[in-house]
Length: 402
Ligand code: ASP
Image (cartoon, rainbow, N blue to C red; front, side, top):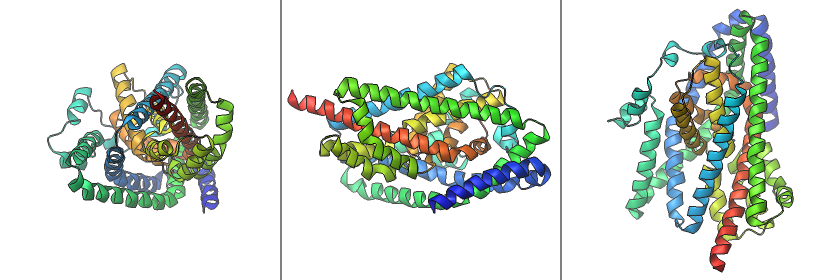
C-alpha cells in the first residue's frame, strides 16, 4: 500500500501541475474538493490535540516523575526549543517567502480565513470564559491550555481519574486511525489544491517564481534539520563520551525505519533495539523512548515554525519579536500534539497558522512536498529520541554512582 500511495501522490502532483497550467479555469472550479480535504483535517484536529496532550501528560505521572522524568523533560525542552530557534533564525536570515506572490496562498483562502485579528484580541482569546464556545469558534490555544490543566487535575485526582485518562487515550487511538484513512484521500486533495494554486499562479504568469521560492524554503528547512542533528551528535560525544560516529552507525537502523515509515511511533520498537545495542539501561530506554516519541518532535516543531514564518513572508505580514515568540511556543506545542504519526505535523500546523492569522488553506502550498519532508523530520525526531535516551541514561548512571 505504501508504495502505491507514494506513486499516487507523485501522480497527483504531476497531474495537478499539468492541469493547473493547461486547464486553469476548470481547476479553479474544482478547488472546493481541496477545501473539503482541508475541512476533514480541521475536523479531527481539535479532539486530537486534546486527547494526545492528555495522554502524553498523564503518562508522565503514571511512571514516577523522578529524576529520569525530569532529565527527559529538560532534554526535550532544550532539543525542541533549539530546533525552533534554528528554524526561526534561518527563515529570518534567508527570507525565502518574501518575493513570492501572496496569491499562491490567497487562491485557496475563504474571505473568513483572512480576517485580521489584533494582538490584544488574540491574547484575550487564549483565556475564554467558555471552553465550548472557544471550540465552536475553532480557537485552538485555549483548548491546549485547557488540556494541560485538565491533565494535571487528572494526575492530582489519582486512581479514580484513571478511567477518564483511559477514555481519552482510547479516543486518541481512534482518531489516529481516522487520520490514517484520511491520508488515502491525500492524492485527491493534493491534486485539487495544487492544481488550483498553480492555475491561479499560471493565470498570472507567476509559476516559475513560486516554484523557485518553494525550493529555497525546502533547502533551508533541510539545512535546519541537519544543524539540529549535528549539535545533538556533538552533545553525545561531549556528555556521554560515546563516539558520535559509532552512535550514528548503531542508530542507522532506526533512522532508515523512520524514513521509510514516516512515523516515530512505528519506529519505536527499532529505537528500543538501538538503545540495547548502545548499552543504554533498559529501565531508562523503556521509560524515555516512548515518552520522547510522544513529545520530543523537534523536527516537526521546526517545520511548524518555519512554515508559519514562510507563509507570513509570502503574505507580506510583518511578525514582531513578540509574535515570533508566540510562534515559538505554539510550534513547540504543535510538535507535541503531532504524536509521531505520518504527517501528524501537517495537521497540528493548523494551530500555529491560527496563532499568526495565516489562512489554513496555506497548507495546500506545502502538500506536494510534505510526504518527503515528513520522512526527513521523522528521522530527526527519532534521532532526537535516541540522543535523549543516551544522555538521560548517562546522567542517571552518574547520579547512581554518586
Ligand atoms: N511523521 C512525524 C513523526 O512521526 C510527525 C510529523 O512531523 O508529521 O515523527
